[in-house]
Image (cartoon, rainbow, N blue to C red; front, side):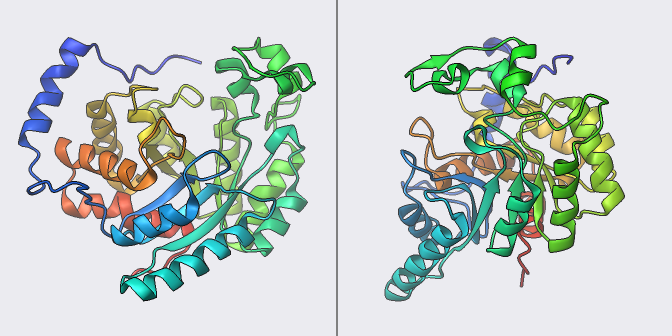
Length: 336
C-alpha cells in the first residue's frame, strides 16, 4: 500500500495555519463556545470507560445538534441502550425547554474477535440499528498497523498491549473481508445486500485498498445508497484524493473525523480541506470519532473539525452539506 502523505512539517504548516486561525472570526468567544447547530455526528463512541452517552446527549441538545449515531455504547443490545438514552434526554429536554438531540445506534461486526455474521447484522437492524460497521479493531490491517490487546494476540487473559503484528499472523488472528481468491466472503456480500434491503448504512470499517474496491463493487452492484468510508486519511485506510474521486462516482461518502486532526494522528487540516475541495463537499461528512479520554467530548470535537474546515474555506452551505445534509442521508433522517 503506497503512503498518502497527509502531515506537513511544522515550519511549513505554520504558514497555512496562521493565515486560517487569525482570519477565522465566528463571533466573540464565550466559553464553552459551541458552533455546531444542526450538526449530526455519525461516528461517536460511548462504551465503557469513555464519555457518558446520557451526558453527551444532553450537551449535544444544549448545543442544538440534530443527531448522534453511537458506533459503540454499553450493553449487548446497542439499540435498546440508545432507546434508553433517547427516552432520558427527551424527558430532560422537556424540563429544560430545549429540543432533544436524535440518537441512533450502530453495530460493529466482528467485535472481540467474534465471527462476522450476516444473520447477526440483520437481527441488529431489525432491532433498531441504523448502521453496520464491517470489522474495525479486530481487522488484520489494525493488528498489523498498531497491534492489539495481548489477550487477543496470545489467546489468554494477559494484560497489556502487543505492537504491530506481521501481516501473515494478523491475517490468521484478525478479520479480512476477502477469500483466498480475492473475492468478498459470502457473509460480507450478504451484509451489503441486507443493508440495501433494510435501508441501513454500511461503513467499510478498517479495510485494505483491495477490500475497499471489492466492497465498492458490491455496493454499486446491489445499489446500496448509504455507504461510508470512515477516516480515509487514517493509516488503516490511507486513501488518496484520486482514489476518493474514483470511489465517489458510485455514491460512497467519505467521513473525515476529528481523530484524524487530533495530535494522535496529526493530519494537516489544510490537506483535509484541499481534499474536500478537490473531490467535492457533496461527497463528505464530518464527525468526531471521539469518546476516548484523550479526546474532547464529541460535541467539542464536532466544533473543532467544523471550525477548522470553515476557517480553511468551506462556505456556510458547504458546512451544512458535510455536517448535516449528508449525515442525515446516512442515518435516514428527513430534514425540514
